[in-house]
Every structure is written in structure tokens, then in C-alpha cells.
Length: 120
Image 1 (cartoon, rainbow, N blue to C red):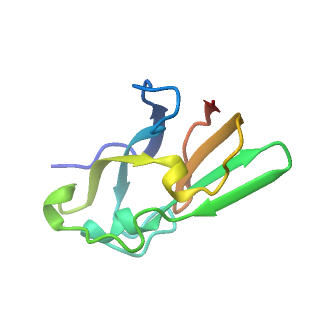
Image 2: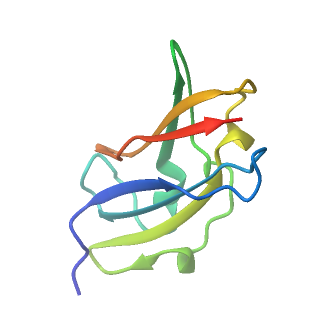
């Protein structure tokens, strides 16, 4: 069984309330020891980096760095793995004011699309 072509992509999930939470959903697939990642299995999630920008300001963080990740959190093959994640962006980013924010994720050398979140 082979791993799909390596990628990472994100999308903003519709708000239940204008005040949030602002949930970003993502999915990815990687090949082991490629795309700048010398890791395997569940540790892949710990290497996702999120960037949030607003005008001239930005913040970056690894939302899963300190989260317990288990092998069954991913679909693994002998060559790589794929998985999904959901995250409340502003639980990690300390931007508090209403504005349009642009978010992207990276995983090794893979970079996601850019998503706009308008914070009320």
C-alpha cells in the first residue's frame, strides 16, 4: 500500500457563534524521511507549524508540539502516513482584536493553502 502524494491543506469551518471558536480543519499525507522530515509515525503531527498574519504582525506556533499523539491518530503505511487535525486558531494565537487574519500551515517542506478568518 502506498502513501498518497505528499500534501498539507487547511480549511476554515463555519462558525457556530460570531465570537468563535475559530476552528481550522486540516489534512496531510507525508512520506517517511522525505520533505525535510526525518521522523515517522505519530510524531509527524508534532511537526505541523501554523502561521497567523494580520497586516504587519504575525505569530507562528506548533499546535501539537506538547500534545500526546498516538499511532492510531494517523493512517500509517510502511512508506508514510496521513491524517487529519482540527484546531481552535485563537486558542494558540494571542491576537485579540477584530480583523482579517491569514493562516497557513507547513509540515517540513510542504506548505498549505492560505485561509482567511475574519474575527469579529
